[in-house]
Length: 334
Image (cartoon, rainbow, N blue to C red; front, side, top):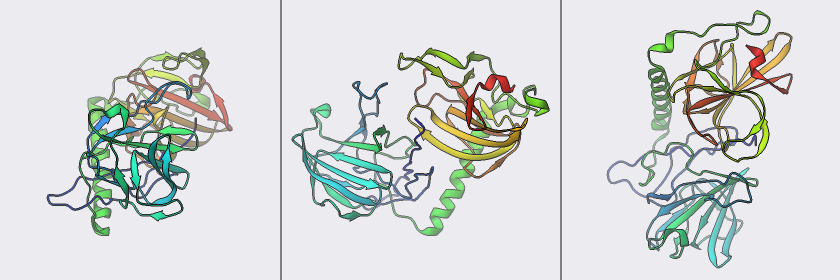
């Protein structure tokens, strides 16, 4: 359940733009450095993972496109399968720990072939059953045995192609995107952004609750609200409106900002030695974060906003904590 997710961040085309190519943006330890939408169609069916691997679900996205449309590699990688599978044409491209899948496709590539982001893999076939009477591409993303959402980052203009940009434009776009995200998250924090919750916690550490809101679900065994399975609730939940500011409970270093299939947008912060023990916290189900891995954060600094991403039934923050590598009840810290 701790698998990190790679993200494909895309930009819309300018008028008259040519075939799909990529704006490289890294995200997470498995980050793909470039990405394109494989066909220029709208999303017909979203990614809907089942609560358990053996149950029914939609393990990818369906993109509407006409039969014969070129299908392009979402990122650079190596073709590891190209052929018929269960009566339909399938292409699989491996990108390190991740692999993307495309069906139904008449392949023009072969297994073992290295492909670049946006390179044509084949043409779309008719006949994907969940799209009738339209034709569509079923696009999947996997890491090991886990199915991931290939469009789990907000994708601007996903129904269109994307354009190649220069290295200068890439650097400028990265800087501007970071500024917009930070500004949006700080704006969303609203008038309450300046007020810190009451401090408390371990040995005078100055621990701050990461959000202003009631503790709605404690650490311990419970029936999972999404899966219906009786299991450990591995943190505590705070009730708060979507868009509410999330703060770092103590000073520390951000070690991870990723999208996880179950935990949604999550950030981990290493707070170093606190009360004689190494403390790490994880903030989950956020709308998004304004910080990045490797960044130093101050106690009480706004790092993101409350959301309901991943396996969530409503707006809240799920806080997890580890002391010396052992999962612990975060309520005991404050």
